[in-house]
Image 1 (cartoon, one colour):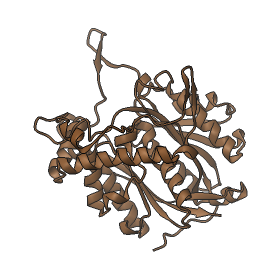
Image 2 (image 1 turned 90 degrees about the horizontal axis):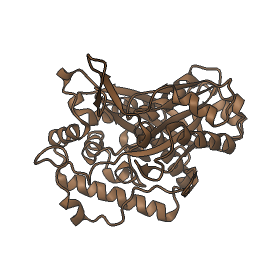
Image 3 (image 1 turned 180 degrees about the vertical axis):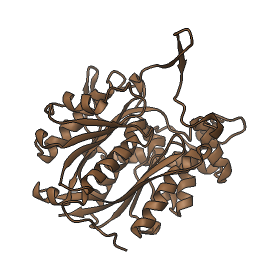
Image 4 (image 1 turned 180 degrees about the horizontal axis):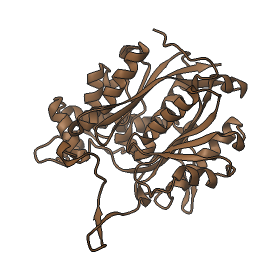
Length: 392
């Protein structure tokens, strides 16, 4: 079934998408602050599309655990864009990067053929320490922000992943097998050079960082089975079937179909629909499925019509529960591996999904192929975007 398009001057399209390598927190990218991670991606997007820096309407960037201060503005100036270009930072925690892309698409749909740089960034390694102020004025440090009132449970992420595994009957065996698949697919993709065209190498004092460093070649089913429960005694969620924290940045060029064609773009991802949904915070990992269900229904697209599905693999339990709920065979999702192998760079991860879809669709070359990007967020939310690949 064909989703209805907006007029060409209001139809949002993505004409380029790039990302840094995704590297383990406190690893290869540990000395780069968020704006220093993002700036090279913004520069590369402009160079690759030939867009004049002064022609950018706004820069919309997601970030979850940074120090505030509007990292979008900081990064765009670091990247050499003129002071006339504004920037805005979006925070929907893990969904921030995808929400930034969605926000830009909705601004395009409002009309005027604007052009945005949109995406996300997270330097988990340099994230500031956070503290509440005690009555005496001294600091009381805390590990994470409060996401919902205490009466809603506000579980830690790992505990919520256990809640999902138990509620939706996702076994330890399925979780381990899916996580192992993610590593094997990512390793195969790295070896085949499938990520090369989307990566922006980062020069460091120790040498250029040009590859994702998360996938582990030594993992086997036997190794996976030896990991103990990480969050709940007797549980099924382990360090092996959970993601690890990472540093990364990813962004896209978003404009109207009309302007993309005027710019001479060879191809694009059309944004056919997007949405965000709320769910029980105790089962926060299923938020993406609720959002995706609404988006697909509104567009009249069935799950089995999707050619590509990219889901942020924060935990195998929630990934499988969401795919099961949507009727998507897990073997059809994350064809090059996902965050279980590559890592989860919070505010960047949603934009990484879009970058991965663009690369996959280009390789496949399928005119009109459909893709779904989706991610769950702390506090019981999820965001999804329906995309379609077109060559001009």
